[in-house]
Length: 315
Image (cartoon, rainbow, N blue to C red; front, side, top):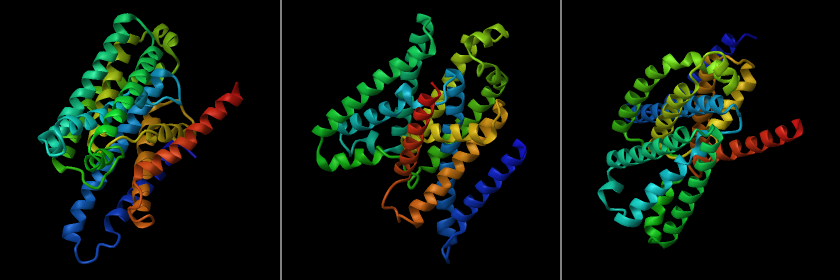
């Protein structure tokens, strides 16, 4: 079966799941229900696309299929920001109750943090694994600070923080969705001229440089794109740690190719299928007794352990 045929199959499956999600049990309130479901589907598709896109680029840069952009520490920073706002200003503060302001603060601080990390990396002349090491250390530090503040805050306000710990597509702000979509389109257009380098970067740093790629120039810009996408996705719906790892590796296994033109589109479609299908299960089977991110993180965590065991056997 050709890769183009595989893309068509995934596209049909994604469209089928989206149509099922939109039109199942509409009843007589379609004018009320359909727009809300459409907003949720748009948030799912946008989030799934940018996480899959970012993880595929990140794994190409690091030349490692068990690493994800969450290792930089952006997920932990997001939780720290939300906890800090509640801890210092309270749950009734403007930053807590205004989704637009909260989104702007979260994305802005995550971008500043990522920019500082990249500056340390490229000014010191270190390799990409030094960035990951620093990111893991900061992520652990942010997580410890969050836990410390969560212990001290009022139990009623802790429930508000707890809602931010898991990704949710149920109450996505339409204005934020529109802004996110516009920013992502602009960044994607900028990325398009860097797309041609990905196949070469997957060979490794030395080979890419020997083939004429300005490695630092390209990698720096790709990392900025990854940071923008992950910041927007996390601030929009919350952290989903293992989604990128899961869909990127499934895309590699399914397409069996080095060409990123197939891998990126394929991982995006797999991500949409996983999220829409998962949301259907959460709503129709579990009746909202759990969240989609819990299911994704459980399946992704199990798959991550499988990859580690698979790699250890290879050694």
